[in-house]
Length: 366
Image 1 (cartoon, one colour):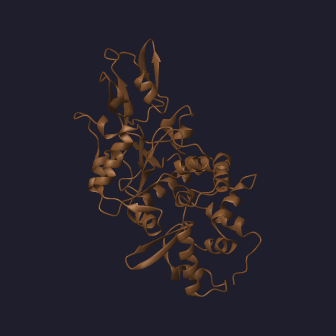
Image 2 (tube, helix red, strand yellow):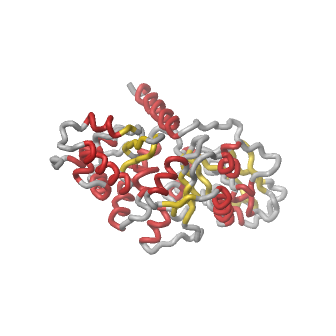
Image 3 (spheres, one colour):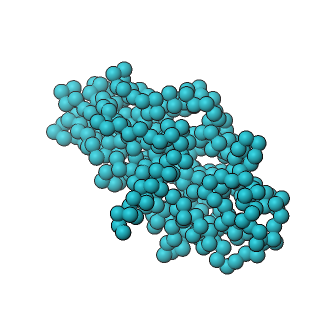
């Protein structure tokens, strides 16, 4: 039996806070309540011995020799924790490996079928008090907005990593679809989404997809069905956000009333600082009839009516293309930004980039 110390949750919080996307402490202590929802005291103790990088159980066991636990008992603990969605687990060839998970995208999304009002209240409080700033501290964006398919004209040079059809068709690996945890949370509080009836709208890829499938949080989806879901998302004016990598880790179809990313960004002065995009909307004033359809459609409040014409605020436009497809006069086009940002290859590369940026910030202040 593991001897649980009184500070087990604080120890875990401090351990998780050493990662690139950390788990900061708050004055209210709400971060500990979030951990208590996810981990038993014994699991919290074991989790402090895990790394952010995947490792076989033998490596982890070497570090826990001070705990009265056999290798088989450790394996049982870790498998149970993975099924609860409080750590990561995958097969590396024929060997199962384990790692700590970040809160987002990670432990929070893994609770999609196990949400409670109490957990959500604490999660939202934690996000406001500390974790929201944690996600943006490196100034390297986690997500990239890509244009909805109908907004891509034949003369717009869109890279494969910014084209939803290319991303899906070129991907070689498992793809899953799962219910949007943000919409599920709003539904739990009696506030269903105002923009769409589409509940399955988040797509994990690769080992992440298999993790969702294995634990019953999502289901495998074919490329054809995935593209059909994206078509429905486009019709409903949802914003398509992909992990800011060439090899996709996750794609989400986001609304502004439920989404924990898009929702808050509509209230900040410059949303373009928090979502990478390689495009922006441009309106032909001679063709614009001032109908206001694009003003209503834009979820970033990037389009305003000025002198009976629509005008784009480039500090707010994230290049989603939803205004393009709704314009009755074809007066709006997406344009490529002067400097195209080429994403890194994988999520591991993205975390390395974040770490380097954080180190640069530390060096500049010393």
